[in-house]
Image 1 (spheres, rainbow, N blue to C red):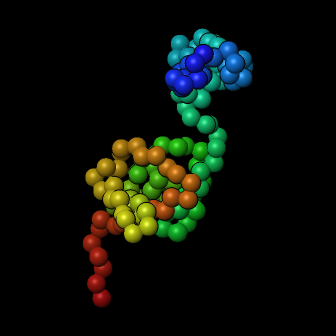
Image 2: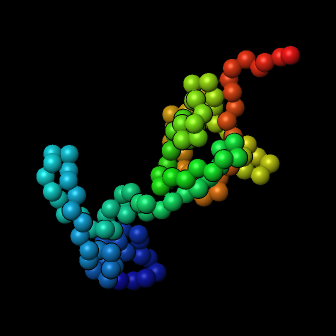
Length: 124
């Protein structure tokens, strides 16, 4: 195999890849058992089970999901997504997910999010 032009699928399917040698039993939608390699599972699902910790309104949240919707993130934080939306803070930059609560986003270790209420602001 010429290493100057190796692609990810070639590496994953290579007999030299140790992950290819191990098989995992997976049940399909029809209930039948099928055999897949660990490298196929990793290619499809990423690294399952790796904990990711981020904060919402200063409170730490830990998940093993690398992709969540803003509404799911709010739900994990105990914030009602019907009356709030999510904003991600990246240094001085902010990314608002208002109106995009059901679109999946990648969650990274140490990400910082805040919730913003869409309800009326109380006055005194």
